[in-house]
Length: 493
Ligand code: MSP
Image (cartoon, rainbow, N blue to C red; front, side, top):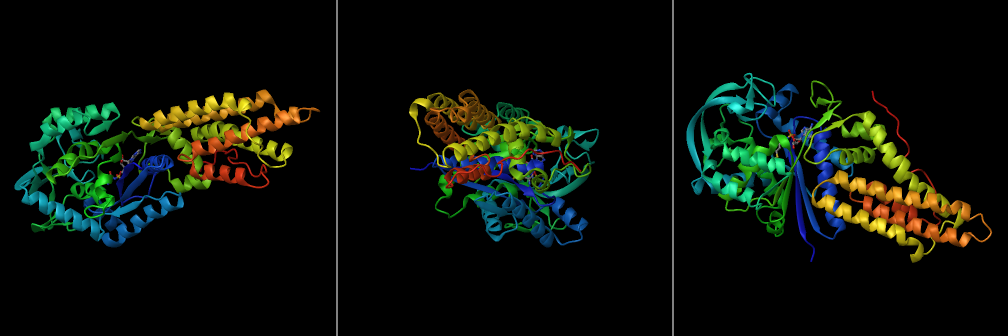
């Protein structure tokens, strides 16, 4: 029986073009799906766009468009970019689509009827960037820490989701690992939030329509729309086929959310309690990554250093960029992106090592074996078989711990071993000796199988390169052909 696996990316705010941060999470999700499918698991993935809220209204106004048209265009841009990059989430959710709106309203109705929602007057400091009221801790020198802008004093009649009832229960879920949060530091951070409840409380989940009309109406009070985070989190259920897709329950029982560290609170605290209020289980796992800086600076629109994945494809090839993202960031920690580092890294790993191995092997097979892969000779293969098993084991454990950079390091080690095997056995010399051709043929049989194994190891990480290697090996006759990874040069503008 194939095991179900379900992974989500955050649904991205439809107010900006996809940048390095979005691309990273999306690439990791795509890699996990491919990894699981390669193992025969039944993998499902969700991504999407978060299209309601004040931030979207502001951005649409700035662009001189209605929120409807603006979000339509921006969501299409996200879908276009992922398709261009060969990434296809199983389900792409727009929070403005009818199926999602129905889910949000049905859930609000259910949670309201079960006594989890209460109307209250509320006054506080509100940050439009965060789309929420801030607490002391969210501010520094009177400004929102994340958005470096001054919050506004607001008084509103709001509906509150009575989240604080369940902080004790949630602590137990996280401590027992029933809701797994990784890496450890974010689990600790979530537990610290719960210990010091002054930063939490109940959650305002409505906005008066008089001020914000762009949202999903509360089914029990049409004068209010739903708070954007309450709406957005439910997209994970919509994406999993809630309520009536027969596969929904299976998917949900195996859900893993990938997020960046800035959105820990809604995922670690709000979401499991929302699910509890619906009578549902928390997700299996929350996997939190750090931030990409670019040239040692925070990524920001004003600095213009957002790093567009399409621009990177144009300059260096997308899989080159994909390799760098996966190879450089230790999942959970911040990383720095520079094009200089990308160039250096991919030339060392891909052009000089992996690519070179593929080229020289194909070239030798073309030259000395008439372009046909010789049969495998077990006695010659032994040393490399061990190296392959070691690589497979390292990749297995790296992926179980969600450390793709360690998986890629293991692939590089394996390619180096095969390169060393060729350097040591020198089949090109042997083939020219009077009785050496037979031995050279055996060596190339082994090298060819090692390259095929390499293609398989690479498949979840660099699907296109992997398919190209496989096609080269399947060709009759095998020829060296174009290099797999030409050396790249800095093309910074
Ligand atoms: N719409 C919400 C998510 C709702 S999920 C139910 C949102 N959207 S976002 O577009 O602002 O951010 C999406 C993701 O991108 C977040 O996980 C965030 O951490 C990530 N990143 C944004 N900038 C980033 C970097 N510079 N580096 C890495 N990831 C970053 O939040």
